Image 1 (cartoon, one colour):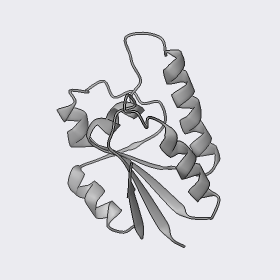
Image 2 (tube, helix red, strand yellow):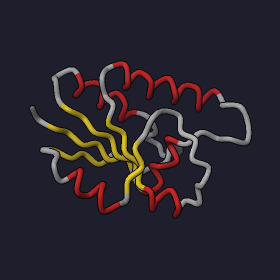
Image 3 (cartoon, one colour):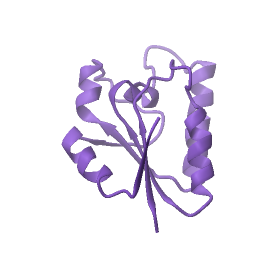
Image 4 (cartoon, rainbow, N blue to C red):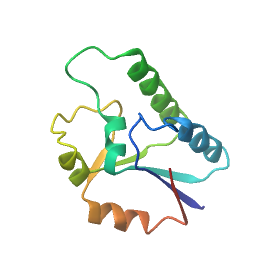
Length: 118
């Protein structure tokens, strides 16, 4: 089975914000093992804002990620150093993720057949 890694390096304020979810869902239909990696500013996409209730945008984003879980995509990785670099120590996530060091993430990504940077 082919393995496909999606690397998300932009915050959700980026103009392509959540279009990658459609791409991931499309690839999930062909029986590909998928891993989603949140690095750099991409780590901001998985964090829950703890200061207030979820905004409608965050609620919609959470539902989209839950849809990925429904379609069997369960490998979500977040870079530990990038959480620290973005001064995020409030580790409450919108969905289950695995926090790994950048070296561990590079090692995991190297085992994938194809990598897409989004």
